Image 1 (tube, rainbow over the protein chains, first blue to last red):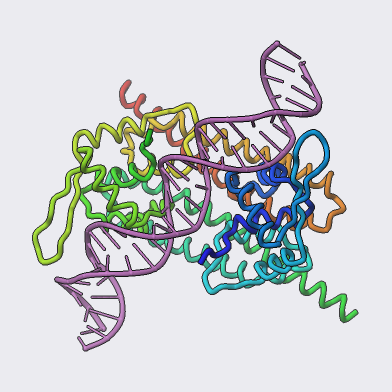
Image 2: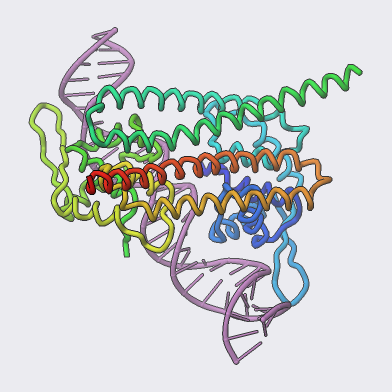
Length: 189
Length: 189
DNA sequence: AATTGCATGTAAGGAGTTACATGATTAA
DNA sequence: TTAATCATGTAACTCCTTACATGCAATT
């Protein structure tokens, strides 16, 4: 069935910002703000060829001593990205895919992922609740276990990460509502 | 070369806490404080057999209508875990492996991963510095880009996660020093 | 002259998920 | 009796990393 995975959109998204070589795509992920997405040449080069074969990008061999393929996005490629941004497929997208979508959006499109961001927030809130229950279970069931202290340290890690994600997504959702209000206000003005 | 990976220690570690079936191992990771480690039956059952073949665990078929293999750790298995906890292999361990090690330690062994925890803290501090630089680069280079706002949101996610990890590891390191001081005090008392 | 960075790619293998297959036990 | 949970396992497949191979350009 070969469902198109995040990495293909990670590549497609980068060439949608500006025409890029495979090498530059890797640099962008390593050095830029999107460094949450590890990506290797072993994925990039074959996938660029695949995307080119499907007509989503076009490669152009650049002149000069060094061989260099610079890829640009096609209209079909842009359409596919737009569809991907919007798609709400029942299942909650992973945090990586959500960040990836966010990264390739224009501010005007932000509303497209409001539902997905809401889902993310909800899931993290549930995870926190899970941790809260796990902690009281641990304390009641293993109150005498010498390992309890350590297990709570492990739990603390998850809680810290999860709380940060909840705070972040709340901030984004606030901005989304704010943005909508602004657009409405300027429309009615 | 088949270097023994984290998942094998994830399994070995669980049976080191108490004899368990494959099913229980999965439950423990899903429902317990160590739910940072996703693990599937497709990994568990083959690896239990492999560990058994290597003499690190022993399986015992339990009586009763339902077939059920309960695995216990052997002396060799315990030795291997201890060696793994201690091992500092130049390269920084991933956060998952560090958490895994922590999870299977006794409070008395905590000192064994002090170096690795220090490395973790250092790496996260560097990551924060990387983000700080990425932000000022973005602002100077893309101050006029309408996507800047969005890219900073993506950056904020990473910063939030990283700050939480720095705080967590600082807390653990404090506890380690405290624990050492306590042991010293009780020794000299 | 040597090293580092730019640049592209393939092959092999390990890691991990998912779907499938099977069947007992227990609670509603 | 029906659904959920307990319980074990395999096969196929996707995903991804790593090692390898190659060679130019710029810097030291």
